[in-house]
Length: 183
Image (tube, rainbow, N blue to C red; front, side, top):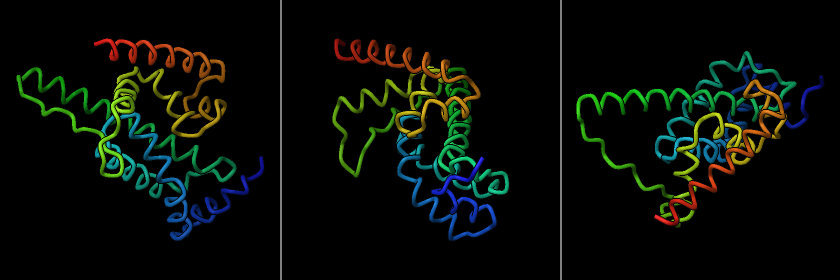
């Protein structure tokens, strides 16, 4: 399999070229942030996860395969960071319930310093509350910009599996948004 031409800079980064890695960070940061923010539903937490993802990518750049698009490899790292975040959040919630600790209300998502419109906020919250099995393929293909085949590889499943999960994710989202609009 030949290297992707747009990722020759990925091969340079793999060889230890910090400037090439910085170019990849500039190229990928906006799309990666969008993907992660929709996964976790909180812009501040998303920012931290994106930073952790880039740090992890740099530390493991020697494992990057330039025959694969860098963005796919990076989103796989970010997906794992999102999963870790979700597990830690679940433990914190369980501990808070066990010790009857009040948790502060979630921060209002903001975009460019301005309040997002209500429909986008509801959509982000609905996506963040989807089960991971549906949320992951949805975000990898929409916010992550991956093809269904690339998402299938990242999720270690088949393209048909991704298609089925996407269909169910969209159905669940439509139901959740209809319920939130009524209530």
